[in-house]
Image 1 (cartoon, rainbow, N blue to C red):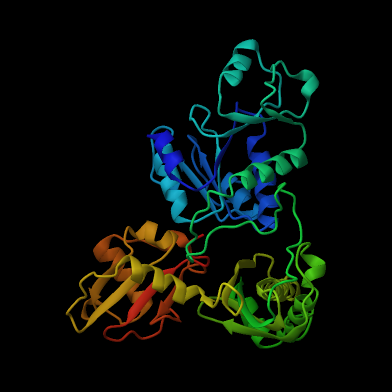
Image 2 (image 1 turned 120 degrees about the horizontal axis):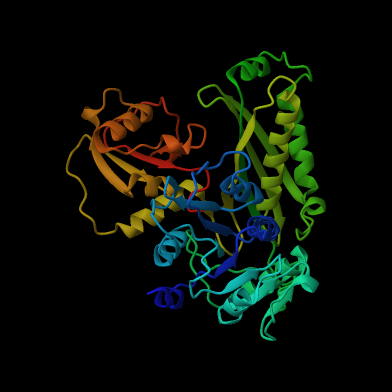
Length: 454
């Protein structure tokens, strides 16, 4: 079954395996960070038998997420994140099927020593002969990370790549991933995965855009900084120690957009025709929403300029407020929409709605005039156990998305509280909405995480 899944999937799967205490988590953290910086979307799966502390400071899931993983999936006997609870090691078939729904470029597994998947073996300490035999007899081991080769007792095979630094290992993984690029898979936006910043040798390089046409291009990126209500009040009243917080953030965002190519190694310098930054305080969600819009007439897109502008504006807000609130967090930074270029126009909300519409094309529609169409995207759909459902608006005690969430939990057992109030997003009729907005008959309500689909 496992072999058939690996043959059927186009998702590259690599297991970082080894015995306990060898440094697998630290190596994975380094790989995720470096690969994410190249624009590679990485999903990490770890099976743990101990009590889980998901996304808490210092936990494996939190370390992987901070390193840049699009998803950090942990399962165990005492809890789970995104994947069902298991009494033993989960079925690799299920892990791969679930990871494919997140549309990453690469699935990294921590562990899975006994499974027939490509492996990067970690051997930090000397092992005895019996262990060496186990390693040598596994035909799926393609490389060994062994920092101190002089202390190893493993007779490494000539067919294995032997790596003794994190940097060497990262470079090997890039080449390994590039060699599997021909087995592309469709991302959630319908485009084939392609690592354009890697050449045929797997080396990072700047993409040649000399032959591309000059077109009008626009990108919007957004970020959200959560803070305590008291901090937001100080900001609104302009009583923070550093003065006009929002004006400083706007200026910082504009400056950052113009210097993106100096900050991101493989970005082309662009002549921007417009940069606008909107910083909107939001009392309901407890923070400040940043929207950055960048425009250019050029040969390549301005998504990175918009993301850099939104990121630096949020960081500036943090810097201006940190004297009174050190528990603030930047909940997300993401591209919201783009226009122009070869791949055409794209919108975060519209894209997800179109995808689910295609999947459900031909389904019978409800005849109830007062029905709400409720849709769930990304990890929210996994938690809800549904992609969409229809509900009677009259069944709600109060016609707001907040009341709808309580109804879903009470009547259907759908509890989305684990997502976090600051991360759960809502749209009504394909437009961003607030939890206290009023719903009407035949409205379409969508719940989704900050980065839908991974």
